[in-house]
Image (cartoon, rainbow, N blue to C red; front, side, top):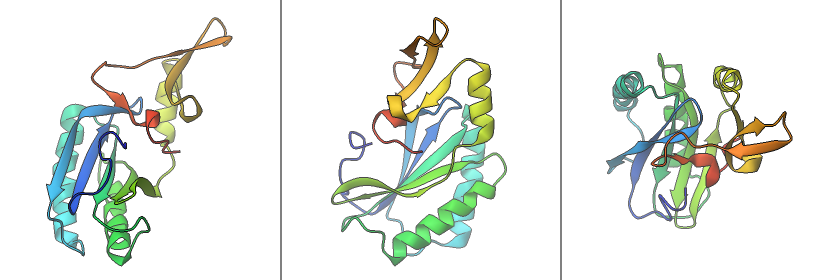
Length: 166
């Protein structure tokens, strides 16, 4: 994540999209100039817009990054945003896996939800397992004696390579 957003420059909200293999899709959406306190109606409208993106691009889950200059610890404004964005997880088809903070000292998790069991089940059916300890996705080769690193597309970056979410 540090390669994408090394430190905060301005106050904004980033939305990152991931496939069922926990691989980041090649799109990020920044919303500049977010207010100190989230508007419930604006967050719900953003959630409805995200539902359309999720359906169109087969997004399995999203992660939000709240970028703002200042110290690393979440303040009252950050906590309000985290709470508001986390409620979008109850939107149809929208899974919010994490809310991260990008500050003067870099990116760190502020809210991390557990991995969805459906994602893990579909991955193991395909013979693929998400392995944060290995730094990404891998599969067993030769009866489990060896693991091979896989990537669904050279243009996609597994978030687990730069920031473990689990």
